[in-house]
Length: 121
Image (cartoon, rainbow, N blue to C red; front, side, top):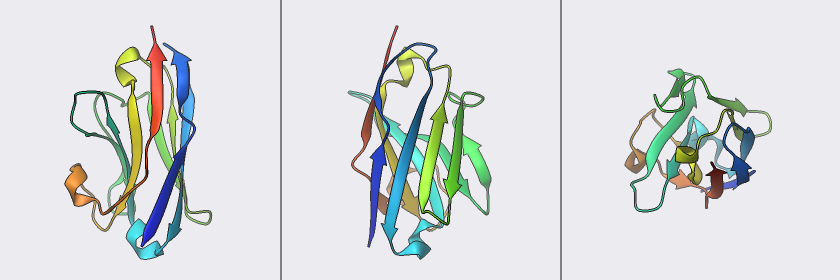
């Protein structure tokens, strides 16, 4: 069993930066792949970024060049540095962990509760 807890969300203005964190506890083998997803009201959960030894770092086109995913394996933490935020980045952001790299949310077995990010124009 893995527990994931996100933090760092909030209300910011367009163009601002924000850093999300995710702290993991439990079985370390299921933290092989870690990713960020987001879900806006009325929309499906969508892939944001992934990090793993196999694939390195991969980003959704919508955030490429603006967001940076990183992890500290010693501390079991995952981060998402977000810059040049846009109103369309407004969503609940979730961290997830799994055994294999995937862009599909259904392939991840462990999820945090989510943290709200709101970007005003």
